[in-house]
Image (cartoon, rainbow, N blue to C red; front, side):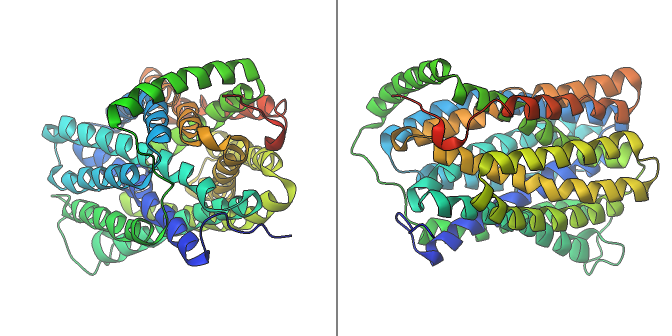
Length: 428
C-alpha cells in the first residue's frame, strides 16, 4: 500500500529530488575527482604534501560543520521555514566554487585554494542539513524511503552528467574547447561550469517545492529557544541510548565514506599513478554504478526497511574497499573494485537519511538532522587527517587510506545493536 504525500505532489517531489542532482556536482567535481587531482598535481609541491594539506583542510572544515549544523538546525526548527537557509548556503557553495577559477598552478595558490575549499565544504554540508530535513514535511514514511533513494540516485547521475560534460568540453584528451593544461584553464573553466550547474538545477526546488511551515518568531527569540531546545534534545538523545547508538554508528561509517571521497582522487592520482583524465573517467564510471545502486536499493529500503538496507550496503562497502586498498595492484583491478564500491555508496547514505526521517519526531526534525549531520562530521576531520598524517609518515597513500577500514567495520557492528527506526523514541 502506497503512502499518500503529506504535502507535495509528484512534480514538487521531483523538483526536490533534482536538488540532489545539482548538489552532488560540488562533491564530485571539486572534492573528489577533478579539483583534488589538479591541486595535488599542479598546485601542491608534490602528491604527498598535497594529500596532507588536502586532508587537513577537509578536516578543519568538517569540524566547523560538526559544531554549526546542529545549532543552525535548532534555530531553523524554531523559525520553521527551511528554504531560505537552503538557498543561502547553496549560493555560497556556488560562489566558492566559481572563485576557484583564480586558483592558478603553483604553490602561490595553495592557501587561496584551501580556504575556498573549506568555505565550499562548509556551505555545501550545511545546505544538505536543511535539504534533508525538508523531506519529512513533503511525503509520508513509506514514500520518503523511496524518494530518499531516488534523490541519491539522481545525485550520482547528476555528478556523472556533470563529469561527462566537463570531460567532453573542458579537460578530455579531445575536448571540444581546447584550453591550456599548463595554465590549468580546462580545470578552472570546469569549476565555473560546476558553479553554474549547481545554481541552475537548484532552482526547481526553490521555485516549485513547498517550504516547511514558517513561524512568526523573531530571530533573537528563535536563536535562544533553538539553543535551549538543542540542549534538551542532546540530553534526550543521551538518555534514549538507541538514537545515540545509531548516531555513533552513522558517525563511524559515514565519516569513513566521506574520507574516501575526500581523498579518493588524491589516492587514485598518487598511489595508482592515474592521470587527471584517467581519474575523471574513473569518476564517471563510479557515478554510473553509484546512481544505479541508489535507485535500485530504494526499493530494498521500501520493502526491507532502512536498517537492513544500511547493513547490506555496509557489508558491500567493506569488501570492495578492502579490495581497492589491499588487493588492487593494477589500475584495472582497482577499477573493478571501485565499480563494486560505487554500487553500495548511494544506498548507505539514502537509507541513513530515511532512517532518521522516520525516527525523528516532527517538532525536532531540523535539529535532529543537524545532529545527524554532526554524527556525519564529528570525526570526519579525523579520517582525512589520519590519512594525511599516515601517508606522510609512511610515504604511502595506500597505507594512509587503509586506516579507514576499521571505521566501516565498527559502524556495521554497532548498527547491529540498533532497533528499527519506528522503535526509536526521542522525547522533547
